[in-house]
Image (cartoon, rainbow, N blue to C red; front, side, top):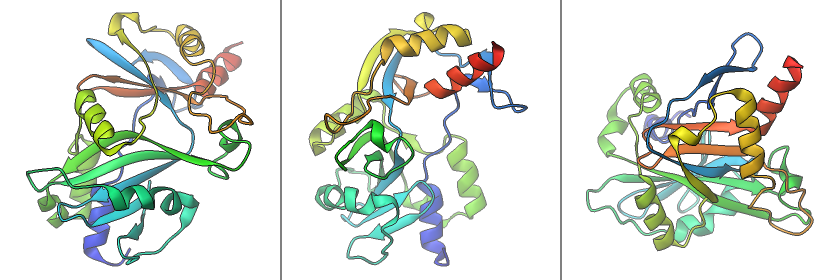
Length: 252
């Protein structure tokens, strides 16, 4: 991306990495008996297996649409890249979003776009070629960040610089904009979370036996996993079925 401003915007609005609930073994990619520490209430949401999309909304109503790694589209077709079907899925939503921030901040809506030909799990969500999206986070940032060096922006992002909505604010924003969230499965006390790998594998199976975001009757319905987060989003982690199945198979 040759335009310095767009490069900075892209870097500042990428979604940060989410750790796995159990640490990954750097030697073989398996899970270690080292769980993420949670306190208080923990919200469990379905992790949808599609492709990460983002809508970057400016205070004046201008917007950009991006994938996980790059900006794909801007209002007025100033950028045009139809990659992964993200723009087709999200442009109608982006066009109707209304800036609501009184502090003149940039809002970033993070959504999972899934379904027809999107990712290896597309058939788990649709058998008739449908595409859907679900909102899973909203962050805000001040325009001043875009004046920083890109290396500085990357470090800021990966170290929690983006300010994400807490659960209550995220719910209100989703309701106000008429956007469906990733399914909320349950809220549990941190003490109820299994600390061992085998226990978490059983925990996942009990909480999410089938996906809750299937788009039609022909879907395979196999879920990817669960995202765990505190109500204030200060701690967040992911737990994927395949990671636990692979680890337990290797142990046996």
